[in-house]
Amino acid sequence: MTQEQIIIEQLKTGSVSRNWALRNYISRLGAIICRLNKQGWVIKGNFESYENGMDYVYRVIKVPPTQDTTPESTPDLALSQTIAPEVNKDAETAKATQGRLFKPQDIIY
Image 1: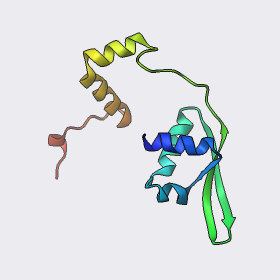
Image 2: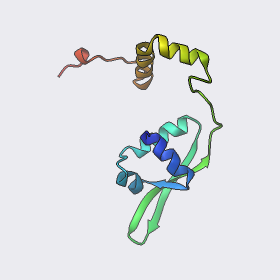
Image 3: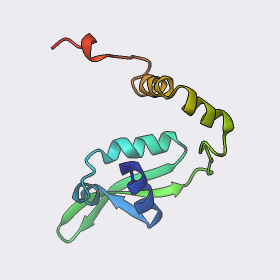
């Protein structure tokens, strides 16, 4: 289960706090929330006071419509994953790095 999936499951039960995420070894909660917002989730956060201090808590306002993109439901996707998985990997990397592909030999140490 990915960190994003763990956060989604926790959000479905109510809320997720920064300290809860850290206790569960998820250090980039803000980045995951941002990614979920880009996927159509509407998640809002605010500071909440507790007897031991304050914590930043995120709650779901709106869940996006479900989109089934499993290979079985999308034959073209299944075919592309079996023919050229390395091309798909490069495309995912390009998307994640905003089109900038770097290879280890390109990085100057």
